[in-house]
Amino acid sequence: MSIEGIPVVPEKQEELKYRVAWKSKLTGATGHGEYMDKGKAQVWLESVKKSTPDLVHWLEPEGENN
Image 1: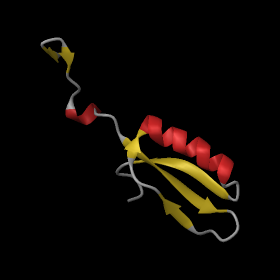
Image 2 (image 1 turned 120 degrees about the horizontal axis):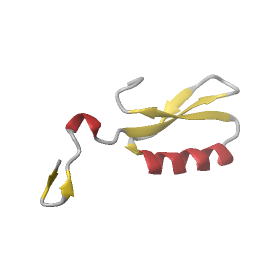
Image 3 (image 1 turned 180 degrees about the vertical axis):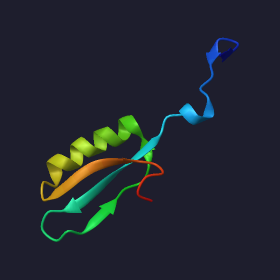
Image 4 (image 1 turned 90 degrees about the horizontal axis):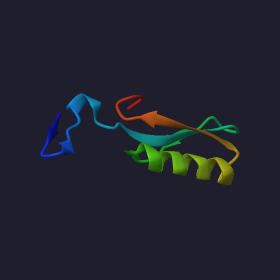
């Protein structure tokens, strides 16, 4: 479905937002960043994995683990 040639994405299929979450390998402390689009979150994830190897990092989709 489209409006004047512009594709319309149904509400339920809108792109999810993601955040980078982490857990310290040393202390077990956890935390997370702000939600953002998936592409930006993946770039952040790769960056923090390299800069803070003492933490385990992963992506969390919005609505999960809030």
